[in-house]
Length: 332
Ligand code: KG4
Ligand code: ZN
Image: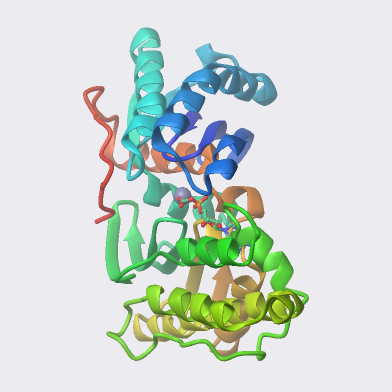
């Protein structure tokens, strides 16, 4: 079955065609560059950009897949969590398409989409597994028992991991969103240059990033302009080490605790080189597998939404066309 997926929850307009929840036929992603000059996503501007680009991106996704709309068996779109205006653009477009062509429709939870990116990329992933969701809006450890069966073991009490990367990147003058640029700069720096605080002692699987972000800001303020210029890469590397160490420590502990053999990372921060390398190494030491999606399936994309929609359709059937955008939609 061919699924058309649509993702517009934040600042990526994306449309994809996925076959049987396993094969990506096309996955067109347009990242809205316009927000860079504001230093963050402006919701109203994002909605207008989605409106302008959704139809051409949809056409491009069909073209690249070599599939016609008549061959599409299912339409899936993100219903939340996310920004309400942007969500409404993709969701309304998807519902209109499904209604006019009488194609079954499934609304998808964006976080379930990130989880599905791993099922799409790794066909031998065990049904029962642990996943670390790390994105610009979420940081959580989730035990997965099957499609739609999730138990959240812990999440962040304040900022999300990606948010911390973006804020520190901004402090270091790397632009927005700066997670990937910070990762790149950190590779030239010394992670042991400065020991930033690691919030590990708080409740078992809870995370906290606001203290780390403040510590970096205070450290930067304490430096002269010359010292800051000299140590930018070291600060990036030391921040990244602190941010990633906590994620790795808690994920390995949870994997042992919950007795799972497969662990996945999902969400934009899953693209982080240190997180991928360190978590793989530490999990291998305890005989567990660490799986993460290829780069283009880590950050927001419609292929993961198509896959999640397909799995949901197989288990629960079609959704309702009355489905509305839900900005704070929960995973459980
Ligand atoms: O999943 P995503 O595309 O959007 C949300 O659903 O939030 O995640 C975007 C986040 C941003 O905060 C971005 O800076 C971060 O993922 N990110 C990274 C890297 N690539 C993207 N953070 C750290 N290292 C990276 N290589
Ligand atoms: Zn996301």
